[in-house]
Length: 139
Image (cartoon, rainbow, N blue to C red; front, side, top):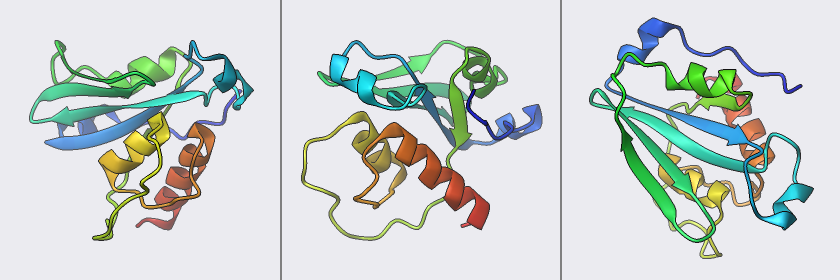
């Protein structure tokens, strides 16, 4: 069982803009089965101006959808109750430089959305540990 940090209380869902990363085992790609259980894929859920948006980078395309749920629906809790690990993305200081030119994975896509310039973060579990470390520092 993965040790998950507690989710935000219901009142924090009233923010105009917030981002969470969802880590899961969901994958149809055999080679990804070699990655740590529970951290074989990652995607984002965002709350933007009373709308929920999902950004799901796949190997063949990136799905971006506005979800038909009310703003008070707690997607972080919903995905957590499904056994997925969900963490809130802290505000990051984004350097004004070009990110890695290498092929884009789900981790790279999420790093681009949140502005995380850590070239050594290549697996979902490394991304999870990095975000947790940033949260603990309070940056």
